Length: 110
Length: 113
Image 1 (tube, rainbow over the protein chains, first blue to last red):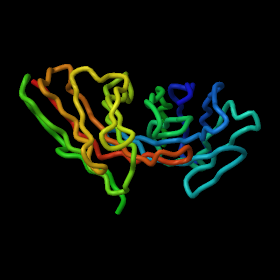
Image 2 (tube, rainbow over the protein chains, first blue to last red):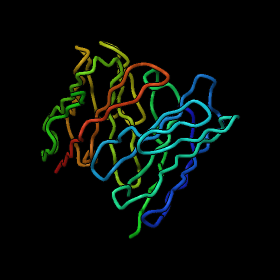
Image 3 (cartoon, rainbow over the protein chains, first blue to last red):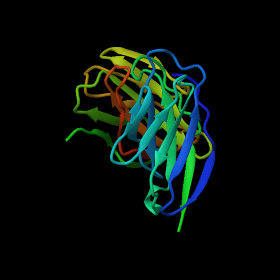
């Protein structure tokens, strides 16, 4: 998987939109970008995946610019239950060793 | 329901006493892997398997063994556990594809005293 860089932590007030950006300069042509959410003492959980432009599902949006060297996870109107660590992974899962980055610890404040 | 099941969820053991943590998935996934998570060190991959009878080392394989005799099961074996293997362990599985997602188990909290 490609090396990724994310902010270590972010704070946000409840009800605000949160954008977490991930840099992945070495993304390969066939690589997809996938975001996972992890609550304390639980396994990571898939949030969203995309290849280019914009993807939206019921919990988040993923914005990918044309050069695909970065991506932004957007969480609309966060609540306290969105407090978690968010990981960005880039690559084809299942063909190689997986290295997680540090992730971004999001703290939602009342 | 699609799931990855780990057992046990919690385990306290003594140094040197062999133990096995089981992992089973019901999604016919080819790829399975084990991770440990420690405060400040994030998720680190221990071993992975791309299919039956095919296993390979991750970033932190020392002190661990795995086997993949059946597609659905991928046990993690600690032949002589030591206190530095006290950690939270996760098993995960996925298809081998560029646009797939990984499913993680609930975790096993291991304490070696």
